[in-house]
Image 1 (cartoon, rainbow, N blue to C red):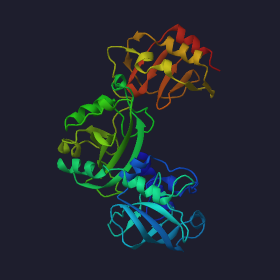
Image 2: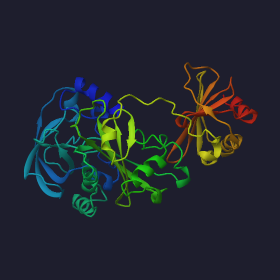
Image 3: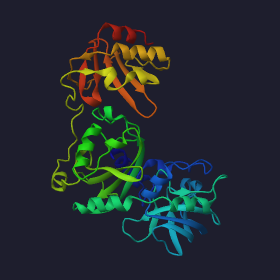
Image 4: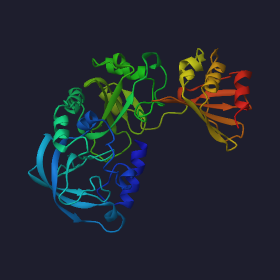
Length: 400
């Protein structure tokens, strides 16, 4: 959410209103031949209105760079509606950072939501606001696929409203694979697609969800969708202490829900509206408190032996990737012991003898820092440090 705030401020200056939520909105339009980002079910949940349209008129509204990107004032004729309602003909301002990049006479499926003041419809924004026909799927087939998906955004909205929250708009969505249940106790900030909304161990979100009758644990290992909502305040009002509601969706059902507070407060139970609204607005400290005060086996906690590669950087400026499975397993084996832990501290300055290791998995990653001078390995995401010993030090010495 901090990135979104920064980008929104940049766009306010560079693009003029209306403000988009991400700087990438001003990049070149995506190749229409490529598939849209996000699964179709996630896009169905994200949009309030999904309609097949034909561009009746495309008028220039911006000059220069934005005109080259295709910024236009579009008059759209509704051909068919799959979700929500749209007028028979309506106007969309597609710019200054265009999301449709459409031309007169073109037909496509538009993903829309109400403008903040409710006066018109607008593109939902990133990662995509438009679906086009492909060689393997016509617009009619696409609309049929969309209608076959039961949307869950209304159910999620009703969940928050049941506990007294005012839902003002959708924020965004993401998709990622939940780790195995055995890994729910470790920090989730390294899961690709989960950050920055899931920073604590997944067991924390499971516990909060159980308070309202939901439970993500049976969905461990499955692909899930995160759908997030603005609560209490109207976008793009990224004021300190702005609350956001989040749900996880697996198998077309809600399996988890929680509240966060901008910039990094929470998570809170959906039931704890008073607590979330009274939360201090400052950032939590980093690294967090040691989550393994009784000791930790670094290799087994993060299943390092199953990593596909280890990316590394050094304080001296070196970098590279270790892809040899035998070497990856050797690093894991050197950390396969339960070691005493101490509270991790962020390095105040870069040292030539500091190594940054990034164990890469197919859907997640784990980052470690090693101070060769002190012989200390830190897992900052979980707030602890260990001394792995000479076997690990020897492997580090072999890194160029």
